[in-house]
Image (cartoon, rainbow, N blue to C red; front, side):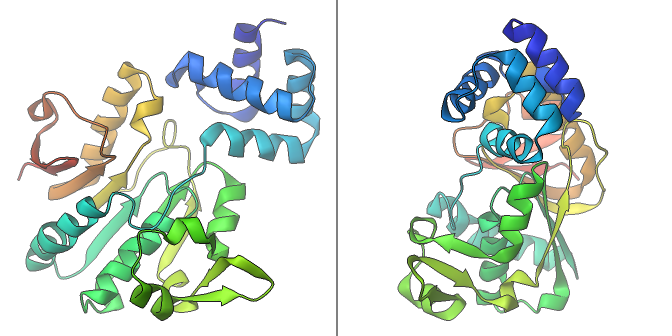
Length: 260
């Protein structure tokens, strides 16, 4: 079985649109997992995806690269705190914020901490976090993070919202107060429909893995899900060329506002 045949059958088996991802990346990540799991060929890999739930979960986790951290790109979050969130709150009584994909949960939890630190009442905002990988969603909902995920946080925030796990010196438990502010859901961002009326959508470091055609398609889906005047927040290395074609205005680095 060659890789193209494997890709097509795996996509159907996983109900995942692998054609939307850059082909070289899909092959590289698949081969990497096969080496790690001592899988000899694509035929064996496909059989394991079909029959072994643990391998299937490992493939999804390995394929989607579930790495993130709190306050990733601190300057962007500072701009959000000083400009984006105040603008949204001045125009909306209640905020709807969506992190998609959310990976290990550090991004939506960062937003929750940021809003509380700004003195915003939890009753004034809704935080939804979506990802296709059920394993990472389960991890995210526990709120346990390695020390490296907290490297951009001040000591004051660490002490306020985290407690060190005695049995693991390098792992920290997020407070239940913050965990309870985020709703997690499993969602295939490529194939599933989106809820509408969002004030802020964060989709960071997702577009870099997609084909140009799929990036254009998903940009349209995200913009349609935003309310007029809402913001789309991408990763610092991701750009939307000709944002006006999508009724967007670029306001700062990786922030785009939907035209009113």
